[in-house]
Picture 1 (cartoon, rainbow, N blue to C red):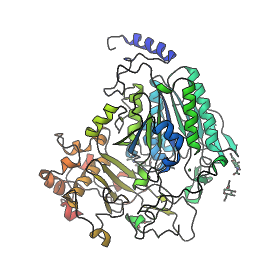
Picture 2 (cartoon, protein in one colour; picture 1 turned 60 degrees about the vertical axis):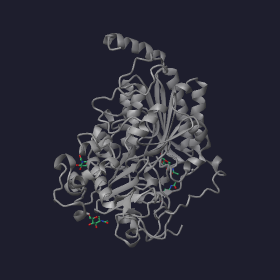
Picture 3 (tube, rainbow, N blue to C red; picture 1 turned 90 degrees about the vertical axis):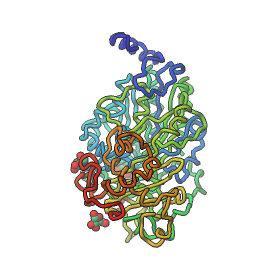
Picture 4 (tube, protein in one colour; picture 1 turned 135 degrees about the vertical axis):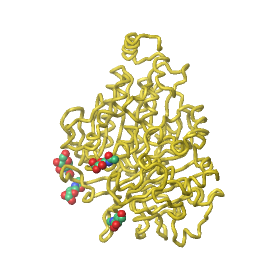
Length: 586
Ligand SMILES: *[C@@H]1O[C@H](CO)[C@@H](O)[C@H](O)[C@H]1NC(C)=O
Ligand SMILES: *[C@@H]1O[C@H](CO)[C@@H](O)[C@H](O)[C@H]1NC(C)=O
Ligand SMILES: *[C@@H]1O[C@H](CO)[C@@H](O)[C@H](O)[C@H]1NC(C)=O
Ligand SMILES: *[C@@H]1O[C@H](CO)[C@@H](O)[C@H](O)[C@H]1NC(C)=O
């Protein structure tokens, strides 16, 4: 291929694009292409389904039989998939740009720290996945919720870029299941009062699918229904949906589904409204509390249409959610925004050519890995300007099998601002908690299953999910329950483990690109430490326990204000500015 002249390549491309057929060797532009050279002859289509606030931990997937039939049974379930910021807008921006929130600086749902205007002002509207896909010859379509603070007032200043066809839900009606407003291409917004939002979306989705097929090019179609997010009655204040005054209520199902969930209850594991408080900071102070199917049909509708068009075998379907959700765990009223497993572990199911069927893997993947995965699928080289922080997810049996040995085991979770209870308001009870700013790390491997976090109040948490899946015993807390807890994990002292976790999180909290994927290499440039187990070698005790900088906040801020966040890896390097050992410091 390299021997071909550019003009020749372009003309081949043009012909093939028109025919929706690419020669198998036309696009091995990345070193890590997903395609087995001998199999794929056509550039695949991709359908991406993004639900809103769908947990994995509360077993919501059990109630979605058509998703099971079409996706789970026909594809691979990545059960260790995580969002990196458990809030809609930052999470969606990370997903569509392939960057951690600290590199997009879209960290909230509304300005000044987040929302659609912040996405635009950060230059991301010109530099994200759909634009890269269009450059790769794809037609791109989107319907549903794009970002928060994308409103009936600002939708055209500027329009969202990158979509061949689009029909967006707009605020303040995004979460109004029975009174949504959609805005198509560059047209004016249209109210769908009295119609069920997910059904409206399904019709739009099928329309785009028809358009995509008749255009005869490979396509990327993204569907982002609001289900199962809470219903929200809110108005714009100074241009944006003001959550503090919003009225949240349970998500509304379509009339035809009213009989389905009568006996469904939130599962009640030991962290459900526990007798003792758990967590740190505001979570620990919570008082004990005194006490979702149209997406399924949408998937069925899309899959049967793909089959009717005869293109199902050349289409990847990716199913995930922007973030998770908690109801009652840790005494939390309905919401997200925390680092607990309910909030960060989200479904990811992928089916498509070469993807193992009825297969479950526990390799660690995150939302920042999805853009690189999709670029890989379409054979698009990562653009110079993309600065992706993730790594493509393997989609073949051999790729997944290699990854179980070599893929990283960490997830970098981050959050800034406040948390909000989405249930009804209880008089005299807090509805919004400030100082919900933290850095966190999940480590998941055959040996380890840890969650470590440092709050802006400098409180620390460490949970061993192997022995404490409900995250009820903070091993770094000094309260009665925790001091009775083990002081060793896997034979290593807590102090040793925590020192390593803190150092790698210190690197991750401001990492860029490669360093986000391989943070241990930044600590060990010789490349002989790739994971926690390697780093626990006693020869590094001095290095980790006495020489390393610690994560430390100077104060709590509601956005990514660097000078509130203590020493920085790039600027301050590795050595602790206080010269304290881990035990003196912790
Ligand atoms: C539905 O939304 C429209 C704006 O699109 C608004 O004018 C109308 O009052 C809303 N209806 C209800 C019942 O809230
Ligand atoms: C939304 O809330 C406003 C103000 O509380 C109320 O007047 C209106 O009826 C509510 N709309 C719906 C559709 O519940
Ligand atoms: C937030 O944390 C700061 C310490 O950074 C503390 O002074 C302040 O009282 C806390 N605010 C709330 C609302 O808890
Ligand atoms: C992130 O955005 C906020 C709000 O515009 C700004 O104050 C802050 O300095 C930005 N942070 C970084 C690291 O650029």
